[in-house]
Length: 420
Image (cartoon, rainbow, N blue to C red; front, side):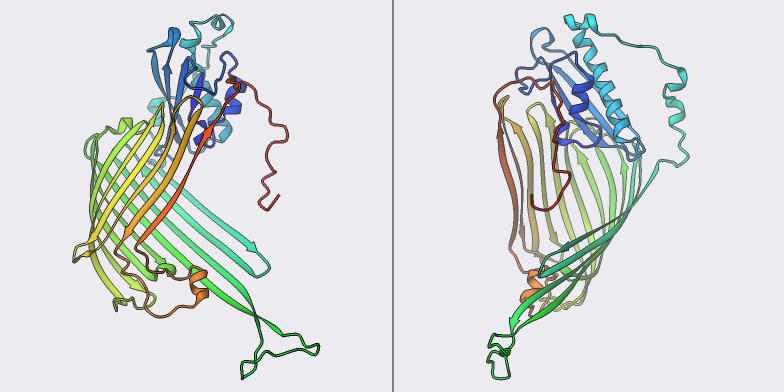
């Protein structure tokens, strides 16, 4: 058996636990040599939990051509321990028809007894005292200290969601504050520019402290209504403060229409969505922009497309966007993002993550001169015609194909962050 999907997941998909609990099969590292290929996909469910999709694919010998799909639904309140136990139990259920065709089936016991009180009552599940509303509140902080600099980051967020087959409603808020202090060592000079010396004849070095405060605040609200298995419409309403991008405050409203070429029932395995909307933005700037605006309201249109595939050969996600301001088509931006992990052979795979944007709509750029410290601290944004961010690599393995054993001795680095 070969399992694909656990290395991309957190929480319940625990390969060590699965190998420990299921010993009737051999776990292979080479997908091409395995009799059974198990592909595990997952998505967030409406209640804040997670739904796993288990696709069992028979590849060779007596299993060739046999396939089955199971779904595992977990609640938001389930712990990682509860999730992994349930997921592993369903993997056992999915394997049962395959194992039954082997000699190993003679030594497998299946317990079909259970108390009626332990069975999930699907009729009662439809009655929800919270009416499918889910609330999440969180906060975080980070401190970094070096000899010549120190930085404090702290923030908080709130998310409120209600997701059903027909409606999707979300409300979110986020605040971040970054306080950074840098210390520059500069020789002291007199009024003539000559260095000032101490009693030993050495130059006197002054420490100059620079303080920067980069604040961000934002909120968002989204409402989506399903029209059919392929069509939906809705709107996004959001606002933000971001001093780095010169926004004292920005608020936008974007109604949109979306079409998915595949039914939503297949979204775990594949989707191809095209979304078109018209947005109205009101911008209030910290400093006057290079175009002489302190405040303005602009309208723009945007087209977004996203493709996602989770298959035996790997996974692929591609996104594309194009937007422009309706009052001046010379202000526009287009971008493409690609994330892929492809298994070329049973032992060789590669991955790539890349995003590129061609930018022609930086209407928010602040006018005036800025110091080197302003730029280095990230307090301001510089003009740029494009942005590119990439990462890629490959993996090749050889040796034993058996992957049955679990040994956690001397595992990890005790989560230590600094240099080892």
